Image (cartoon, rainbow, N blue to C red; front, side, top):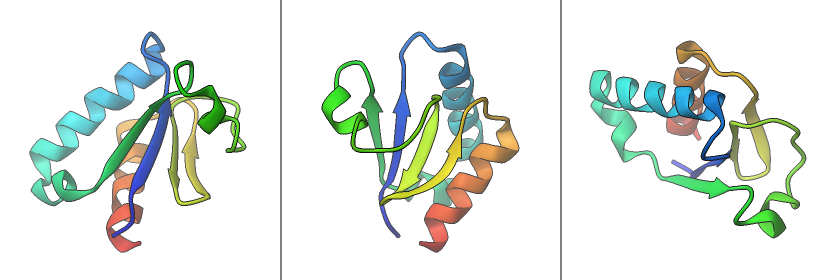
Length: 87
């Protein structure tokens, strides 16, 4: 299993919603708790963020493979978690 990276902005409503979905999915699927998740605040770590090609947050990556970008629904976050388990 590879590390999952998420770029976010603390005050972004879409990021807050994605975090809510993270919590719900981890409560429903204990195996998701074992996925290594690296959270990157794009304002605080702009040099790191600039190394990736994305335009919207939340944005999920495994390595240099973009899994999802933009407004997330619960199903989108679950697809990201499933991809991380398979990686």
